[in-house]
Length: 124
Image 1 (cartoon, rainbow, N blue to C red):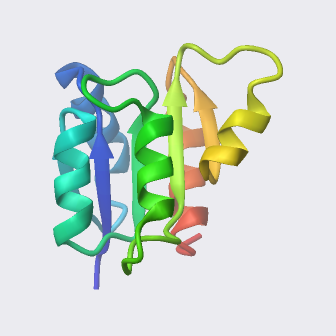
Image 2: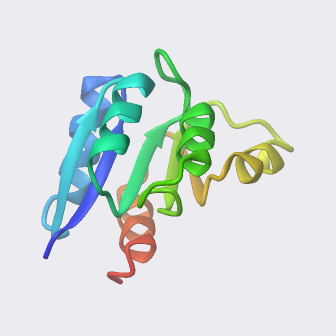
């Protein structure tokens, strides 16, 4: 059975890039283009991983992670991989506190992203 990923990315080109990187990895990707859309999907579907951008319309990646972790649902403990161009030194504690499992900087490195996704899904 394929792993289910919720991809939260507001830039269509970045979403397509991530989908192409993960093509052939035995995953089914559902795309949300903002944080509020992701909240609706995470409340109604079961996922194995959330792969989210940091800067998003409506709710950013940290707010989304906090929301997921605060809910008493099947998705509460799923891995959350955050990708962003906006990391600042010392920001790691805020990411951990929000419930982010792992993070990577943009520009996206295909091999590094694929390896992280497969490892977080326990498919490596």
